[in-house]
Image 1: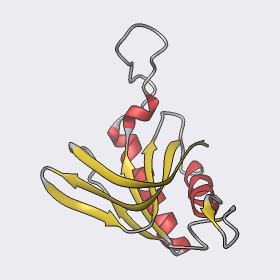
Image 2 (image 1 turned 90 degrees about the vertical axis):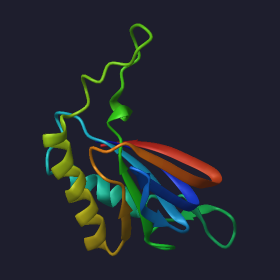
Image 3 (image 1 turned 180 degrees about the vertical axis):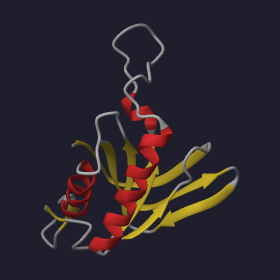
Image 4 (image 1 turned 90 degrees about the horizontal axis):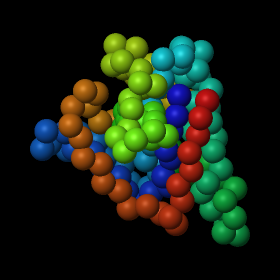
Length: 145
């Protein structure tokens, strides 16, 4: 499981012309699932996202997590995080999990974060989405579990 995590002052996602998710300050997270991901992968990713210390403390040091601050995350499924560009000019999506495998794991990740106390907004699986955000910092990190 891969995630591209962006600290934001706001983020939103639209699907088929309709806004389906929005947060204020928090984390905008693009989530990719691969074939070898299992249900046991999900709590590890949820805990990493929940406790990742990329928010500033009172001294301006990245020492706080979303759990310590806004508690808000926007999660968007993003199979293209597994695009392989080592050969040729067109990415291969062979490492991206099929939707039948990825969607339940993505939904479990959303549920796990909510169980931890997060407010989670999401996009819509298997639709064409547009994601917008105001990147705070900018701070962007990638995670692989």
